[in-house]
Image 1 (cartoon, one colour):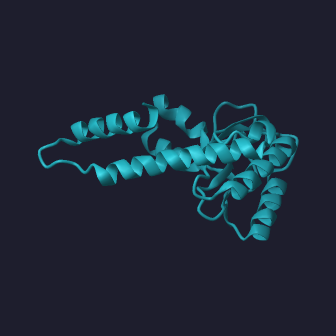
Image 2 (image 1 turned 45 degrees about the vertical axis):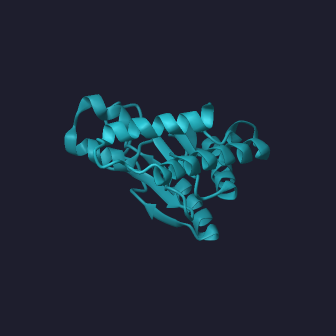
Length: 196
């Protein structure tokens, strides 16, 4: 639970991933964000191939109190989540392959300014290095850079989290109650309080 940015896309084969990595690394250093570099050069002539090897290419970085921003790709240029990719490599369940393509970064606890910085960086990188880049910003800032909309959405998520946390504290699990029954009771009380 918490305000999140979801994103997906493909690396543009006409630009250099090593240049993108260097640019993101420089930005991370300016802001003093931690970063991790994966492989820095794609295999030759692999972007037209639906298949991919077992390597991750790109960079990830973490702003304070923020989940990592994953600018990571498979060898065929498709954006991928390296954590889900490792899980999928172990299972090789074809039904779960779609999970490796969804990247997301929760910014709820990082705050509005970091959320805006990440959105602006994603817009810049999307134009310069990516194709078919799609972003779903639960803060609503991606669409029109309206700070009031972003503030309202941050407040709404914060209220929901605080209300749910308060519900758990004020309504503990009863000794004779199963977890399933307890969660059903919590959800009813939460909905009643917040939605009438």
